[in-house]
Amino acid sequence: MRVIHTSDWHLGHTLRGEVSRDYEHRAFLAWLLETCVREAADALLITGDVFDSATPTASSERMWFELLAAARRALPAMDIIAIAGNHDSPGRLGAASSVLRELGVHVIGGLPRTAEGALDFDRMLIEVGGGRGVVAAVPFLRPVDVPADVEDPLAAIYGEVVEAARARRVPEQALIVTGHLYVAGADAAYLSERRVAVGGVESAPLRLFPDDIDYVALGHIHKAQRVGRDTIRYAGAPLALSLDEADYKHQVVVIDFEEGRVAELRQLLVPRVIEIVRVPRRGAAPLDEVLAALDALPALATGADDPTRPYLEIMVALERPEPKLRALVEAALDGKQPRLVSLHVHHTGDGLALGDRVTMQRLAELDPREVFERLWARSHREAPGAEVVSGFQRLLAEVQGDASDPEVS
Image 1 (cartoon, rainbow, N blue to C red):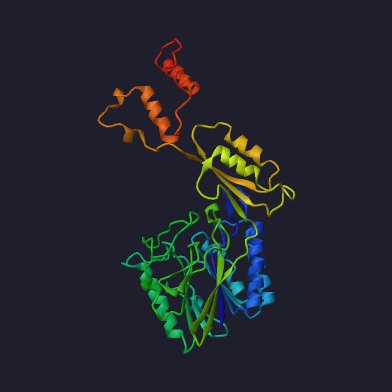
Image 2: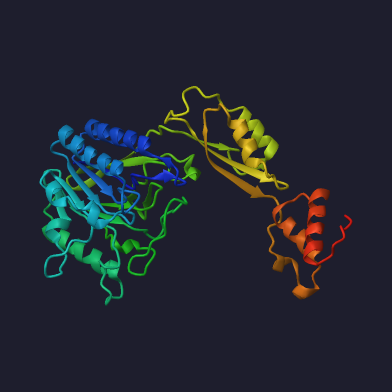
């Protein structure tokens, strides 16, 4: 049996709330379908955060349903299981689950329960690969899902689900458990991830996943990695969800099972259709160096509306204020292939707060000029010029009621 594990698609995501990722997501979904066909996958596991928002855009939902339809046409026997993540709306993601289930697509939005309030194992325990495996599909657990009267709600839910899966499991049948949560020991490397708590706990212990579970398919952490043992895996996000992921290679995981046990694990790299350019490559650089690097960027080879133009992030180290920074950068980028997404300023001062500089002095004892100089030094290494000092002196004179124009010292 061959299973492909992917996660954290975040359909509808935008960079800095402005740049749509629809082109990249469509390219990824097309590649994923081709990969499923090429690998002759028996099951596809999607472990949460299908959408970036609880209220996904119409284009995002269309991409989702088009993928399911295309997968069913290309691989009629492939089982598809998707669980909700913390970004998804359980109700919205699972709204069509009854219809999809008839097509071999199992979507678990909220934690399924029976009319009596017990966990609905008929929905959560899903056979895949023609009965060669059983998936215990546990979605992201929200406060409404976890009991308030138990000491360890995560252990209570996962323990009950795993016990039910063991009871239904037959010999030589692989047991796979899903989750969308932060497992202790995982490397949460990127800023695009949110810290979430389940049952008041921010990290889940590895003991939730006993050794008789053949594979644990996890979502939520955007960096693909193993946790604890080789068969507990985050698939990671397929796209760079923040610009600090420029050097990271995104992937999906392919798991081969033989006689119910993991025989081989492979990582398949997801092609990046839009590159991320950072100036400088690491850290920050003075403005003159940044402008020189921008001048060396390749010229615009296609139209400005080309969706494959690289994303550009710039980090400038300023020795002094530069009111025309944005205009200077945009002028340097005129006619260049990369498109500016993010412009950051790194201040070169010592970063100390006023309270860090003043000891055993009352505020009234501080000279306003001294306060100005100390605050300036917090952000800028270079001392204020004569024009700036003169402007401050004039402002101070107005505040203090002195009509005369102060001399610059």
